[in-house]
Figure 1 (cartoon, rainbow, N blue to C red):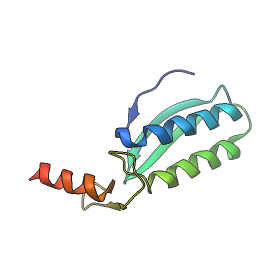
Figure 2: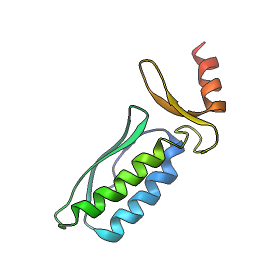
Figure 3: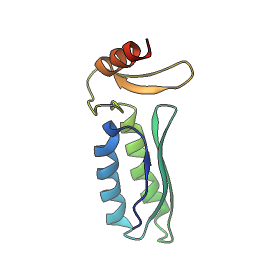
Figure 4: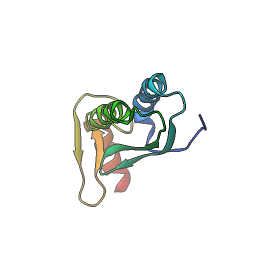
Length: 104
C-alpha cells in the first residue's frame, strides 16, 4: 500500500492506524485515496477491486463515528464536543479552551 498524507490533527492518529489495520485484513490491496477531517469528523475515501466494498465501508463508518467522540487534537474521549460556527471541530474541553485562548 502506498503511504498517503493525512489531513487531520494528531489526536486521530490512533483511530486511523487501527482502521487501516482492519481494512488491510479484509483487503491488503485497498487503495486509500484520502483521509481528512470534514465538519469535525474523519472522512476516508478509498478504491477497491476486492468485491468486499460493504465490509470495508462498514469499518470506515465505524471509525468515522468514533472520530466524533475523540478529540482531534489530543485523542482523549473525555468531555468531547463537536462544535464551531464556520469550522466545526471535535475537541475535548481542555483543547477547546486552549484553542480559544490562542485565537485570542
